[in-house]
Image (cartoon, rainbow, N blue to C red):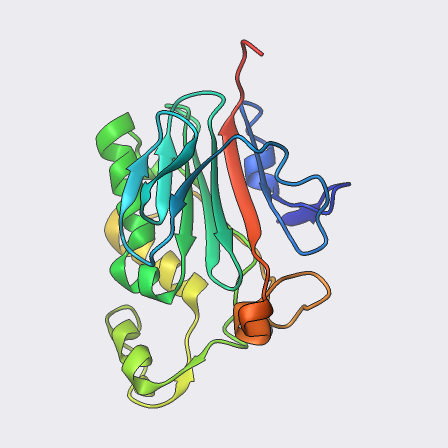
Length: 224
Ligand SMILES: [Zn+2]
């Protein structure tokens, strides 16, 4: 479930229930978001590179950030690519992922889960995973050269050798199930950035004029 708060920032109910963290998925209509300029970011390159954040700032080239340090705001910027926020309640660790089609094909989401497992002892079955607003299957039509790259996750489809539509959210869901079995809490926003210009920026729709939206997650700093 996703809802809008009074700043017009989208929230996943499953992450709101984690009182030890704060999060939000920014939209075109958001104000006062992100709620800090002290962000941990990466220079996004549509890769499968996961960066562990020990402090804020632009840390490296990559497309996912992980941390277990309170007070560090992990953030990614998107306009059609999927923002994915994750939380491990048992070990109190979080992740923010920028997942466009190239990153999805490279497995950026399961690789982030694996990085959390390696670094923080995260058990995939404990993870709360929320996929925010991004391009929907309704609008993600791609040529055969792109579509064929999704065949391994959609063995039942025979149309991926031609121009067709691909569901990035479903791809991520299948990747997590294939790699880790059931991921308990998987919230996905049925919010297409291309279809809803009143709510979202969209690169596919607005090209170079498109703005970017920030998704962010932070472990609460009890010392503040
Ligand atoms: Zn759409």
